[in-house]
Length: 177
Image (cartoon, rainbow, N blue to C red; front, side, top):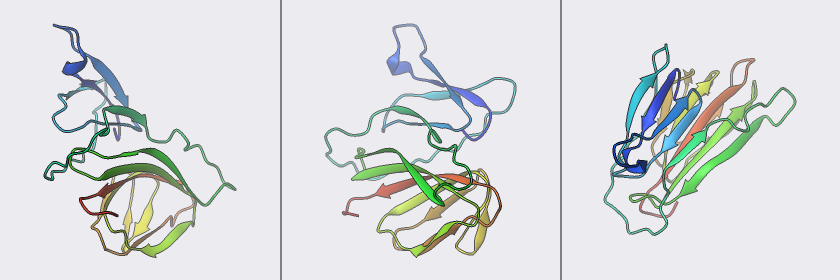
C-alpha cells in the first residue's frame, strides 16, 4: 500500500455468509499464493494507491510453499544518521508454486550511501517507498518501481540528504540462483 488505506477481503478465511477483512495501511503489503481468493476495497477518506506484482510461470512441485502473509515494510526502518549506511531487513523468503524462491527485504539507504554495480542471476523488482535513489543512470522517487532483468548490471545510490527506503523482491526462477 503506497498511500491511503484499503480492506483486503479474504473469502476463504470466513465463516459461511461473512467476509474476512484485513486493513492495509501505507507501508504494509500482503503476499498471497496463486489461486488465493481475495479482493480489495478502498477504506477511509483518501484514495488508496497500491502496486501489485504478479507473475506467471509453469508450476513447480514444491512442498511447504509460502502462504498468505500480511507484513509491515519497515519494521526495522527507523534508522537515523550515524547508523549503517546501507541496512537491510528480511521480510520473507521461500518457494512458491512457480518459483524456486521468492525473497523480499526492506532496505534503508543513508544520504550519500550506495553500492557498486553488480549483476544478479535472477530478476529483481524494487519499489521506492521514501526518498530518492539513482540507478542505471536515472533517478527514482517514492512510489517508483524499478525492474532489473537477470544478468543486468545495476547499482544503487542515495543522492539526497534524506533517508531512502525501498523494498526489494528477488524472483529466483527454475534454475539455481
